[in-house]
Each structure stands twice: as C-alpha cells, then as structure tokens.
Length: 109
Image (tube, rainbow, N blue to C red; front, side, top):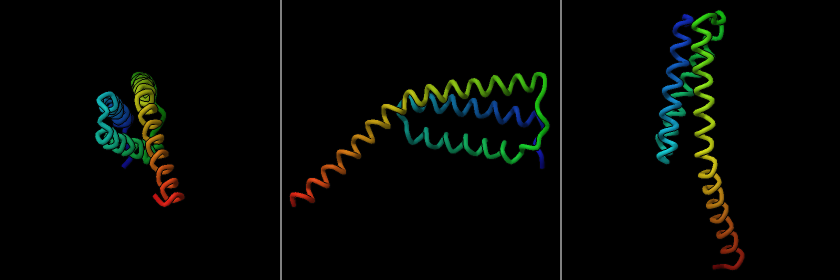
C-alpha cells in the first residue's frame, strides 16, 4: 500500500532520530551500535524507495522533509569526520599485519 505524504515525512523525521543516534555512537566510538543504526536507517531508505510514487510534497510537509534531509546531511558529515580517522587507523593496522605476514613468509620466520 502506498504511503501518505504524512507517512513519508514521518519516515524522514525518524531517519533524523536514527542519524542523531548514529552520531552519538560514533562520538562514543561504539562502532557496533553505529552499524546497527546504519542498518535501521537503510531500512527506512528502502521503505521510501518502495514508495517513490507518492505525489511530490508541498507546503509544510515539503519544508519538514527538506529540514530533515539537511539535519541528516549535517549528522552524516560529522559522523564521517569521526569515522574517517578510525578507518585510516584500521586500514593501516590491517596493512601492517599483511606486511608482517609477507615478511614472515619471505624469511621463514
């Protein structure tokens, strides 16, 4: 069944709440929780995609949707600012481990 315009806005606003929780998880370096919340947010996005035939929003609903998207984009930027250094450290650690294994194999250590 097709979502109403109000339901569409509600999903966007739900996603804002989830991205706020994601930001808190990233700030606390709670990566497992961040992944769980990303999955919740992806489920909301899938629900919106499945209902793309809903007529374009207008008036207050459109303003609420635009505000929700802006808030999500801001939270996403802050999350990336927090996760990028962590991902770089993880990548370096994985790279060092791989290098250590290659050296060990090469020299029979």
